[in-house]
Image (tube, rainbow, N blue to C red; front, side, top):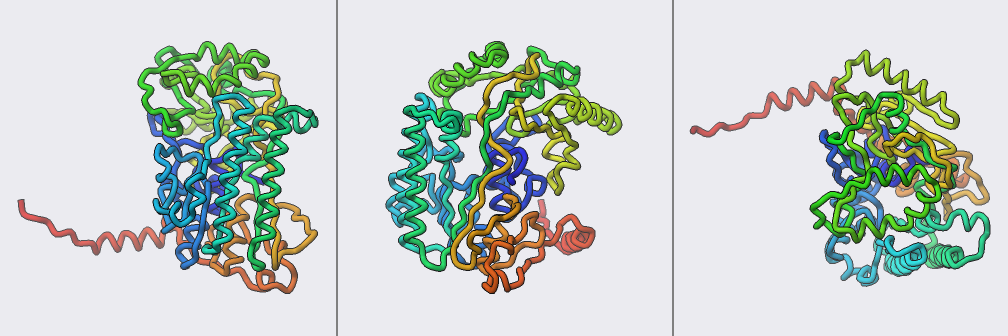
Length: 481
């Protein structure tokens, strides 16, 4: 089971910290300021310690390839930044910069696919990226300089977003043939790792989410608008879901508002599906920044959803506590009366120190993809290919049970066993646990008690007093004017 929402931001952050969304606060690809300006999330936004930082602090060496939010670097290396990191120069993809000199396979490494030239070009580009990733994996494992090596391969996700229905229906066409070629190469990579890894190496294969086809979209902002909770106006605040930080083209100065076109297209399933094929081409080549969302009048709006990637509703901060309490109940009750829609209070759905940053009401559905488009229509029926709550976890090697099916696990349960297998202390404030049931009876990981390191809560009363006393003792010399 992964995070909710099941997107890259919260999922990979939970993987590398062992903490759920409410305890690391990353629930989107982006960060918003008070004026709704956005930027891409980066490593500085992850305030919690990651497994590779703990590995590094204990004098062990770690190699990470394509793991989101490893930049800016928090360790001595070795790091290949993820596809989310927009670097115009290839040498900025690596830390330290000279990493390709030590691992020459990185000189041909690619992590960006060609999105703007059709499905077949996209799949071809995915395969070409996979070939460069294969060379890096083989070189790193062969050189055997690291205690931990992490490789994120996006090929499976990219294939599913393009050809999932055809693959499920076992349709034989050029897209599925190319997809199967990619699957075969992934299989070959795992086989190579299995045959060339050191005998004592443990292998974990896992995904940050699952995948499925949904029956349509639920436009949560349209529902809020129809209920009178969200008010739009021509001069209102536009909340974007795209930032130039994640594109190579940063020279676009003017804006092109296509909001009426987007609202019209999203009413018609066939037109929407047809237009999606050309959207990436248009965004890449048109000399404007695209505006595709109606402006919100926040002087009158009571509730809104910032982003389809968050699936949470925020209440206007200018409302009184009583108004918020009443409105939250009204929204949750109203959404739960809709067929196949669920709504929960974020304060109960999430837990942790960052819950207040996530939102007020979380919206989910087993049938519909949650979308933040503002229009009049609340639902659209069409096949949507998107992530799912349940992914994959496979572990094997010495000390690991064979022919054993784990009843349940969570993406936060990845960091603790990694640390335990390295005989390192596990921070005692993690949400994840060491999956001791996966270890074979009589082996050291099964017998040895989990060692924990105490993480002090800086907000505790004892620590507050300590901080106050330290501040009192600080003496700052004052210079004469």
